[in-house]
Amino acid sequence: MQELTTILLCLCLLTACDNTPTAMPTPIPNQDSGKLVFDPVELDMGNIMEGEEAVATLLIRNNGGDFSQIVTLESSCGCTTLEPETRMLAAGAFTLLHVKVDTFGKLGEIRKSITMTDQHGVKSTAWLRMHVQENPHGMDDQRSIFDGKCAACHVAPAKGKVTGLEIYTAVCVMCHGEAAKGGYAPSLHHFDDVDVLSALIANGTGTHRMPGFAQKKGGPLGDKQVDTLSKWIISLDE
Image (cartoon, rainbow, N blue to C red):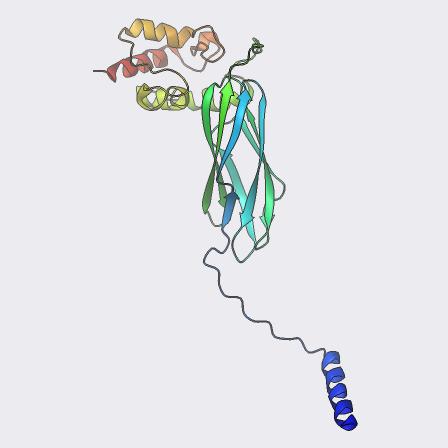
């Protein structure tokens, strides 16, 4: 019995010292290989005072079976900054995405999208929701929605637009909604005088949320664009 025990012990020692690489099982292909996803896909950021910076953190997970890279991160609005802690994720790993939203010029229920694209061109989308409350302490009178990051949404898209629909889609739809039916800002369907509406678009209402969009007021629209836009909006009720 003692001899048998000695033989078995020697066999165990020989096996432990064997440097031959052990064959690893072949991984089963993952149907979601390389898939990057947001967690959560919809985040309620709560009540925010206008002018304050809304801050949130999302997770980005790699649910695939191989390394995956975040190639682009884009927001539906230029006032949102997106900063991932890393862009290359191993299988099953995650990273933090730091989000900041400038709430200047916003009021009421706001919903924004974040779109991520990986190295294969696969896209994933997350949504941010918040309720922006009017700031009782007022806003910076020197600032405009045509300045800084806001210009990406309220100035740049208007360049070269010639039809009423193009101009409206470029600089109006994000506030006044599809077909001018209302959104964050009121519906425009109650106007029936093109001159009155043109004057309103060109000169604004005297608030930072609706400044004058005419170039002579610091806005992005030329006189012809203002006239074309006004006529298109009024035609929606015909």
